[in-house]
Length: 289
Image (tube, rainbow, N blue to C red; front, side):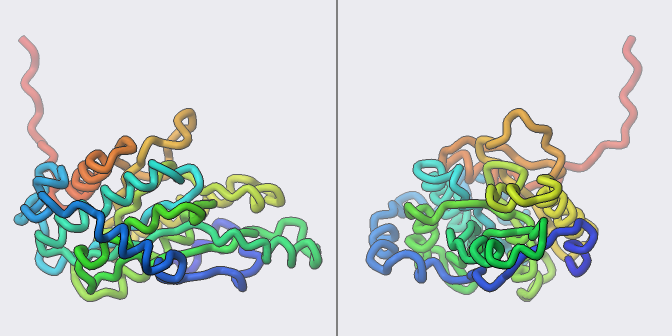
């Protein structure tokens, strides 16, 4: 899966030397993570899925051995209160879904802020269109084998000031999907929580021959997932950052406001699309009299 996506879409990366994959604890100090986890109010978070507003999603809808991954957009457009609310909503949904027997991993993605790729390109200049010039930052906030109660501070730490820069969605989705596919289990769902439907990377766009090449790559990644049959992929769009542009990246994303309860509700609705889909009726309506 994904082997030919970059070639098909002419998606180039100038260098991966400065890309980084790490745990949230490598970016946020232990004291902050502990404080966030300690101050999180667990009251009312222990009664199944009702507290999280996951709608009609119930234990019967969650197959045995369900493997879930939340992939959280940590771009600059979400910084401040929005990303904090997203993190609270993801944490609430994680707690509820683990109560229903799911195994949940929580990941985040942004860029490092390193000028390394651009500096090397400015020295090199052998390419007119170098491709991606930002360094990706892929973050593990909660591993699947760690209980949500023990990971509350780590999940909420994704909202820490200073982490939120650009979003290179296509590469992040590939990373998260590959991690999910590698886990044991027959039912696997990747849930993207983002505030838009296109990548955003200013320095890359400045030197791009076609500024739409990152979105073309993202769309190809989405199509590849749906065609593979190896996992299900659903999306929650939080207060769309591109309200005046046509959404043609995702099939049926679920919208949510910048409120934790709204994010959790939307996650439940998105999961219902693949875990408890509404049957399509083949009955022909009777003619009007």
